[in-house]
Length: 307
Image (cartoon, rainbow, N blue to C red):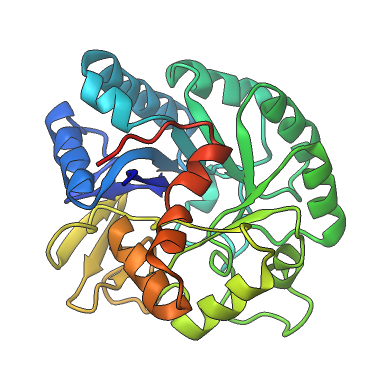
């Protein structure tokens, strides 16, 4: 049985990958925690921050990989989610609007150098100025592009796809609670059969009936899954960090800013997600597992070990 593979892990087992003082011992705790949930390969994900802060954080993660073979194998690439996202309320989610702006190739190159060339996936909003060329250059260099936290109209989505974008980040989330019932970016992205769509199967980001409907709308093989896990995943209820934010996770496993109704990130573990796909979509164990492992790994050219 092949390991599970997740392209969007912000933290795990009480460890926040955005932390300024992240230690190699903490990364081992996170990797060991993921291993207990059948996940031996993943992309640590960093979210919107200043360029200087992201540069430091990628350099720190890469230093861990250079020191430790186990970490190097588990952390098989990085996912950068921001800062090139829509700053509009609702679309930006928990991301810091003050750190957002149009994509910039020089800035990306600085981050990619800090990351040892291992940024494998970038989530961006394709309506931002300069996105088309930015996407084309990154894809030509081997970095995949996913569309997310976006209010893009159809024309910008088309240009992004033509430039090489292939994915949608946590489709159905990263949008305001209230949208036009027909003319909205969820429907626009869902209708693009060219795009692989990642969904979060925790029953919270997408209630089970919504998950079923969204998955049915995608061509066979184009629905993939991620946890978007933050530090509360694989840990007990309590308060946890997500960058500069403090999140609270109760017995219901919903990740919220204390006192707020909105949620950010999930406390889902990948193997729990597989079980949810079996129960909520009626998929066989093999199909559910493949959509959280080998189907994704093939797209990112990642070799998955056997458990």
